[in-house]
Every structure is written in C-alpha cells, then in structure tokens.
Length: 638
Figure 1 (cartoon, rainbow, N blue to C red):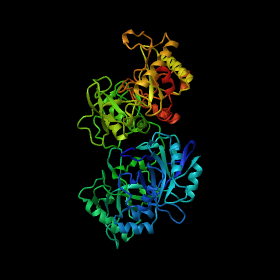
Figure 2 (figure 1 turned 90 degrees about the vertical axis):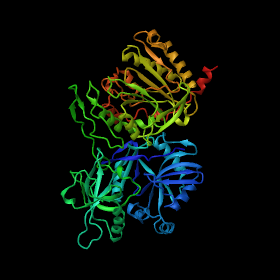
Figure 3 (figure 1 turned 90 degrees about the horizontal axis):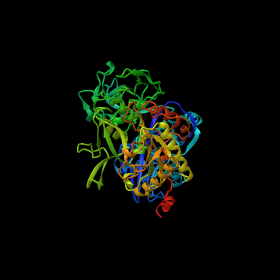
Figure 4 (figure 1 turned 45 degrees about the vertical axis):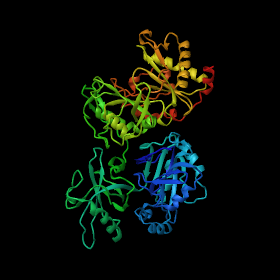
C-alpha cells in the first residue's frame, strides 16, 4: 500500500485538440479527494492532506462497500444541480462544517457524489506505473454501475475538440486531456492538461480594502499569485460575489491574520490603503479574462478553499500560454545558446545559480536546475522508489567531484530517504529515494549533475525491474557501439524479447530489457545478461568483448558490460544530463534510428525537449512492458 501519496495535477492549457493518443474527461467542479481503503478502515483526504471522511459520511460509507479489500482511488467530491452539472458554489457551504449535527443536516440538504477517475492501487497491486487506460479499465469494474453515491468518471477518446464544444454549450467548467499511456505521477504533469471553458482559479488573499457606502466588514479582497521567484504578485481585487453572510464569514477568517506589512512584492497605488493579512487563505474566483498585464478582469468571489495551500497558487499554472520560440543569448564561451526558463518555484533554497557548470557551452547550475524542473514529469516515474547514488560536481564538470550515497544529517525531513543494509561496509546506508520534483531540484542544487538509480525499488529491493546491457567503447567510434547494439537486439528478437535503447549521455549506449516485478534476483539477471553478452561476442569477435580488465581490452572494442546487473551497481538514468562538454542527456532512441549514423552529442539539455514533443516518452514501456525470462534461466542453470 503506497503511503504519503500526492495527487497528480494537470497543467493549464488554452486550446482543445484531437489526438488518438489522448482521452478526454469532463472537468469536475468540486473538491479533489484521494481515498485510501484498507479493510474497514477508510481515509479521504484533500490535495493538501486535510481529512474529509467525517465531513462526508455518506460517501465514506459507500466507499467502504466497494468490492476491494484495499484500494487507493483518486476522484472529486461534487454537488450537482438539477441538470446533473457540478458547481463548486453548490458544495462550498459544506466545506467548513465540523459539528456532527450540521454535517448530518447538510447531508440531507446538499447531497454530494464521489466521481472516481483513477485507481492507484488495488488488493496488493500497485498500478501507478501502468498506462492510464489500463488503470481506468480496472477502476470501471470496481465502481457499481447503478449510479449511486460513487460514480465512474467516464471519458471520450481522441475527439477533444467536439467534446470541448459540447461542454462549452452546457456552460460547464471545462475538460481534462490525459495521455492514455501516462503513469500516475505524484506531481504536476504535462501528461494531464486542463482546458477551461470558463475562467476560474484559486488565489491567495493578501489583504482587503475598506468598505464603502452601506457595505459592512470590507470592500474587496486583494488577490495574489506566486511567481517563479517565489514572490507574491498582485493580480486584482474581488469585490463581487458576496452576500451579508459570506462577508461576515470571510471577515472572521481574515481578522486573526491581519499584519502591519503586505506580503505582496509591489503595491499598486489603488490598494495602498488596504489592510494586509498573512498570505494563508485561498479563495476561488471566477473572472472574464486575463489582461495583458496579468490582471484579472471582472473577478467574482466563489468561496474559500481550505483544501488548497497558498504556496500552490502560482502565476505559471494560472495563466495559460502557447509555447514560444526560445530566445538566445551568448554564453561565457561566446557561443550562442538557448535560454532556459527564468526561474523555478520551489521550497528549496537555491544557491550559486550563476556558477558555470559547462564552460564550453555556457550552461550554469541554474540551467541544470531549470532543466530538472522541466524534465521532472518524464524523469520521476523512472526514479520513483529507487535508491539513488550521486556524483557531485560543485564546481562544474571540470572541477573536483565525489560520490555520495549517505544522506547528510541536515537533510530536510520532507526529503525521502531509507536506510538499506550494505554487506560491503557492514552498516546501514541512508540512501536518497526517488520521490518527486521538489526532491529532484534539491539534489540538483547539491551539484549532482546526473541521477544514478538502482535497478530495484525499495518495495522489492532484492528484485531488479530490468536487465541492463551497458555498451562501453574502448576508444571505438560510435558506429561500432551502434553495430553491437543492433546485434544485441537481433539476439533478443530471436528470444522474442523486447528491449529499449538509450544513449548513455557520454560515449556508450544502454539497452534495457524490462522483466516481471518481484520475480527475479540480481543473480538471475546477471546470469541471463552474461549469457546474452557472450553470444554477442561470438557474433562480433572483432568488436565486442566481455573482458573485465580494462588494460586487456583491445583498442577500438566495445565492452558488453553485464556486471551492471549487480545489487547496488548503477548507470545514469534516462533523461539525466552528463558531466561532458555539450551538456548531453541520456536520451531514449528508436531502433529505426540505428539505420543511420547516430551522434550522442545531438541530445542535450535543450534538444531533448524537441524529441519529447515529437515522440513522447520512448522509455515509458520500460516501466510497463514486463517480460518473463524464467524459461531461459531454467536452461542456463542446468
């Protein structure tokens, strides 16, 4: 059963689209709720970890009756109007109730429903790495078809534009586009896109203006959002949407938060007489559009949101924008390079961002951090739950560097670590464990240029998830490495096994063969890899070698390294930059690309995003295409 789950969040987009690779769901307008069922025990929590089961007892009782001993479900709690449409303002009166009598009365007066749209875990099986369409197929069987309190949030396939038009005609909030092959990522992801028909969003309350005329309590709420640098930026004032009751309720929430100085970075002249509050409260606001100056036009208050934290209200995620052509500026070497995004919104205290890490190319530590911020949705699924080993370069790729396994005592509590026994050192080593975007940024800020994950995850630490063939050239041209990779593929093809190649990011190629989870030991995998490697050498004796001693290898040969399949041994992860000139990245390849000469230097912290835009995540099947090698092992161990 996964613990401390964070919800997968959608990225705001501004245009509907058609694609056979995507499905499209109705965007529900309620309260996001993750549900964890373990026997008769049930927890429902908001995206910021606030409990919900006691607030919605009817739903909790219905969820306990689902035909599963254990499950983790993602969904939305909504109240419906007479046409069956969800609206946040309908459920808003129920959100802050705490007394049992009030909750019971509201359960009769304002019935709510739970629309389930994702299944992360069921009856001992972790589904997060499976494609979305597979997870939803299992979820559909779990949810009763009777249309009761728990409902399945269905979808349409491919036709996003027509679906968006239909949703718009009914004046609903919008749609969510989801890549059908996407794993469940505990972060904001571009594999899920929210496309709104109406402008609503969540804003931080930074203060309030004095009331005018006969109005009591306050005039308007001063609204803000956090920018990439972590500064609270003024985006407008909401004075509409209140009646006497809501004015009083919001006023009572604001009074304890009053402070003498504003949290806003800049104070426009029209709000200088406002009363300021600590930026803790979040409200939902409907508005007509964003102005060119990033100000809200005609904002209308919809209600307070205690299910969303203030720091999650960011300008980047609230203002949709189409991809722009990257600008260029010369680096320290005089070469022209593409400019990375201007900043990263994070809890990590970023340091020395201007320090040059790649002198030949002009890329800095800040560029490395911004790369990881952008690549996180694709990289995190490949690091999740895996112990990590680092090679830190605090002074750049040509400076002193050192390996690190142990997490320091001053490592923040929110960083995920785990102690694992090491027979080599006869002690426990406290490893970092792949978790989320924030941890990835923290690691990059330490000067760890690339990620080195174990082949196994902490849940099944003795059982690797894949076989790795590391093709390492000894002063051999890249064409020779390609040739060895092609022969390796042909051998695996004969065994009816599917493998996935990537550049190492330096001079070699890595070939991954995903295998059944929690089935094979490291020794099983090493035995299999060695047998295949020796067949490669038999077919290419002039080029390939399995000689372990470097000085005994022939210059111009390619070492087929099967010894990476040992517990604790690591290779650079997919999508990891490398400490080589050019800021090359370990990048997935298509086997059809091997028909022509390849150059690892073509895949960098800039160009890798062009490939992702064109091909998507070519390495995603490594997480799902599980294959059985038990038959081959029986033969090899005779």
